[in-house]
Image (cartoon, helix red, strand yellow):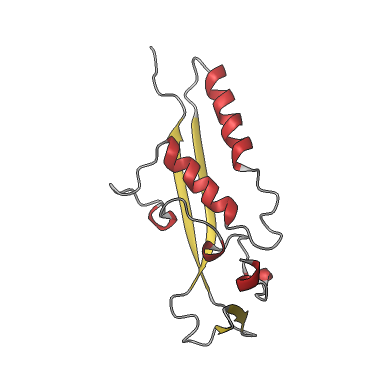
Length: 141
């Protein structure tokens, strides 16, 4: 990935997350905050969203994001220690992706499989990831 994206201006990725830079463990585009049958969030999907975001980090803005295993372990501990509270894990992040026509519009150039920004142009659209899951699988009254 560094070969392909090594020449982009990472300060243009203002969210710190670039979709094309990362590994998508699910269709992150579907989790945009609009509920549908294609984006229901369970533990697996929540973890996949978080892990996807973690791999999408570009530049310095999101470099302090907590590693997925640490987050998952912390949530598991909280779940195990809670008997009366309703626990919810939520994530709401903005990320960026290349505009579908970024190259043909002249926002970027590609040479030898490397992407180069064009000065004064913004090749990105900003999108949202939203996912919520309950950590409690059963509630007792």
